[in-house]
Image 1 (cartoon, rainbow, N blue to C red):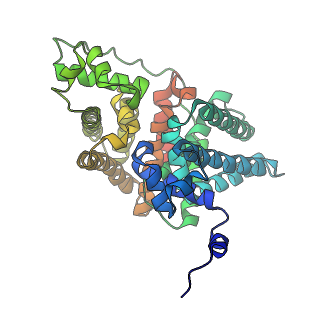
Image 2 (cartoon, helix red, strand yellow):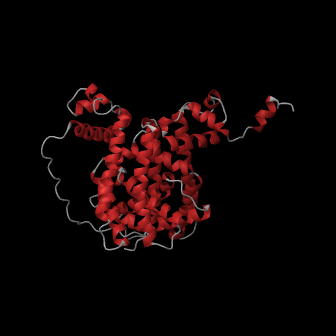
Image 3 (tube, one colour):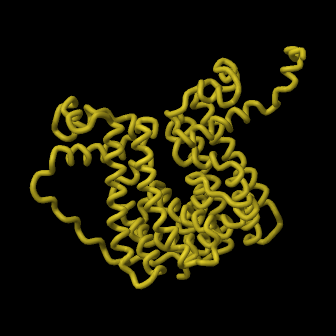
Amino acid sequence: MTSPSPRQARARRPRDRKAQLAAVAAELFRERGFHGVGINDIAAAGGVTGPALYRHFADKQAILAYVVLSGIDDMETATAEALADTKTPGDQLESLLAVLAAQAVERREVAALWRWEGRHLPREDQREIGRRSGALLAAWSKTLLRVRPDLAAADAELLCWATLSVFGSVSVHHTTVAKKRFGQLLVERALTVLETTLPATGAAPEPPPLAVLGTPSRREQLLSEATRLFADRGFRAVSMEDIGSAAGITGPSVYRHFPSKGALVVAIGHRAGDRLAVAAEEALRAADERDALRRLAASYVHTLLHTPELHVAFSADRASIPDRDKAGLLRVQRDYVARWISLLSAVRPELPAREVKITVHAALTIANDLTRTRRVAHRPNLEAELSALLHAALGLPG
């Protein structure tokens, strides 16, 4: 058999090769994190050489920007088409949700990169993403206000952010059902979120934090300062010397307690898991499964808002964590999510097991995203509002 000529080989190459390579890279970024993937990894997975990949993209950041911005392109197109229709505002909204749900199911990796890896892009790209996503949310909010004129503009925006998280939740798990049903399920959850009646302001104030008596151990000081610095600056912008200085010791002394920044992140992740486990045990002291699930949702929101460990664990650089530790942290996370799944299965027995998992992740993602979204993070009644949104996403009656 003769080999194809160069002209024939070129003819067989897909015309959308750039998009295909970007899709391969996006899935690798989703699985390993941005810093856990090299150009050669992408090239090998895409069946090309490194130099061939550079013909399409200047670097990894260019690939990431291409994926995220193409995802926003798709949402902008869907929004323009749905809102240009002559249907009623309610029908326009449902049409838009159906298209967004289909896009989320078809390209699960895009939501993951927008939510978690966009911070690795240059400032210029980040600003463009922020500007364009803000314009999208404004268009969605305006349409929602035509459907629900009782809402304040800021409340409509909060509900639209929460709806975006419902669609983005597909990126945090691998559970799937038939595509048509998957899309329907996401639309159902999104509509329920958009119909949420937000609680009125005026909840009882939080009790003042308890004072810490005595002097914390050096290890405790290092963990606390590392958590604060990682949360403020990001993992890669903080050195062991920074952590030691914040704790009042020299950088090399930090290594007596933790061999690396990755080890600190592992310890922070386990501490976050412990906090959630303790809160869950308290929540499960309830009258029935429905009450327990409501209490569990409230405890999760409270933990997210009042302790920084969870956010650090979510945004940590996965490439810095040894595989054996990744497995342990993943097991802690799955054990916690399993509590939600068990309770929701009992409360809503009509849902198939896979749909229960998808629904639970939609609810959790709303809390995870909105507590990190600057546009809504300083709302005075956010804790009660998030609890209400989680109840809606789970399908619990008011």
